[in-house]
Amino acid sequence: QHSINNEIRKRTVASIVEGNPKWLDAHYDPVANLYTFTSCMALADLHGDGDNKLVVADLGTGAYSMKLRVFRGTAPLVENTLIDLPTGVATFFMDTNEPRSPAIAVASGPFVYVYKNLRPYFKFTLPPLEVNQLEMDLWIQAREDKIDYMALKEMLENIRSKGDVPLTVRSLKFLMVEPQEMAAFAAVHKHTPLKRQTVITCLSTLRKSLADEDAVSCLVVGTESSDIFVLDPEAFTILAKMSLPSVPVFVDISGLFDVEFRVVVACRNGNVYTLKRRDSKKPRHCIELSSQPVGLVRVNKNVVVGCMDESLQGYTQKGKKLWTVNLPAAITTMQLMDHKGRGFKAVLVAMVNSEVHIYRDKYLVNIIKTQDVVTSVCFGRYGREDSTLVMTTKGGGLAIKILKRTAVFEEKDATLGPPVAQNIKLNVPKKTKLYVDQTLRERECAVSMHRVFQTDLYRLRLEAARAYMKALDSCLAPVSSSLAEPLKLNATVQGIGPNFKLTLNLQNTSPSRPCVGLFVCFLYDERLYSMTQAFFKLPMLVPGLNYPIETFVECRSDQGISDIIKVFAVREGSSIPILTAHINMPVSEGLPFS
Image (tube, rainbow, N blue to C red; front, side):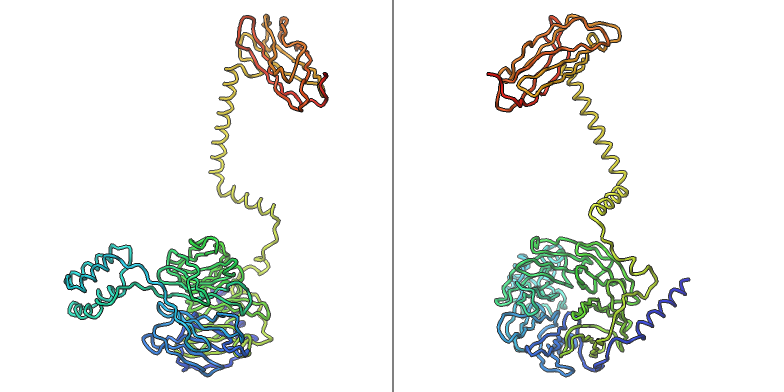
């Protein structure tokens, strides 16, 4: 059965690759000598003439020949030398001047180089970090020749193992040199000020106040010190700073800085964090991945993350896992495919098997075979063609493909499983969803909920028993607790006011013993009520019979208020009542007699 499933999958994949090709091979140069990553590529209209250029930060050999290269069509247009390895490229609008031409930002080491009209314009430097005071004191002693270099090395190693603040680059390099070279290294560097500088790990843009394509945007920089900075597009000052539990490696941003924005960051600790403007000081949501992330793409309101365990995972913005797709090979890079003309959004996933898969949600809709392993991809408008896919390969090649205007992506998967309609979410009413959620909660937490219910029930019974015993002990209950006079009393009020008829029903609940020598009295506020008779002497109460006692109450107030009239049943010669009843009088609806 397993072999049959694999054969079916292979045939389906073959039909996706070979049947109805959707891409035109516009250009392929295997010796373009272009080495870069997806984060170091961008497509932009740099001159405002509608002709988009390809901006690439070339890594060169990794030690030299790092360049910022701009391509027009298939030929290089401009080259600028970079001092350090680039980590990101972004194009953004700094102002609203005409003609509308974006600037280029290149992140390299601790700097952001800004190019305007393809010329160097500004260099932003990350703020320096705090230096360990003990490390600074040691280098001051070394500058004054008060410490031996071997002792300096030992003390720096102790600071590195115990200190909360990391060492500077100078100290780390000093620990790596051979003992015979320590004196020469210290002689060169000990007179320069000690600084601890972080480097940039990722770069992106955030629109400031408008959502237009050519609106002014801010630069967003992620650093090795686990911080994210939002830079002003004109003065290049820090507008906002956000801290993360780990080093950010991939960042995706949506929204407007002046209104509301959301930053989704994949970090080196294997987690994905979400930051918002309101609570930007700490992450709002956290997604714990199964392995380290190798790519992050936001598609509409969902987040798609590629992991090192050869899997593609989809999550909501709040961190709920939606789906997982197992890939045939390891991921090299990922990028968003946004075909705005058709409203089609998908994820481009390049793998080490020289294939680029296109996924819409969890469905594989197209496979592109390449001659070499793809290391970077970029989709968008290139030249005057809207749907262009630009790729660079591991061997330094450059490939350009154009999506056919007649290409249609069918939403079907290459693997066996349920039909697509089964995964379409139903429009469930709120009450039904609440009922289902409550049912699931009761199923998952049945034991704990039952225990809480039993505890509350026992507590309720205990409190009711205590209140009942207190009422019996103080004779405040309408039922007598005395075995000598087991009485029961209830009262009714008739009338709408100002005169009311008050009827008491008294009953002896003893099986055979009559009650004699009892009295009934009323206690009330004489400013509100007056009674024709407030004291009664009861006859002998025969067990089982009901004895009605009637009296009239007059309301003396015209303020529309009412009060309680208390009834006591007492034994002759005793001040402790046998039973007590409280009668809540209604509000009088008529005027009192003068």
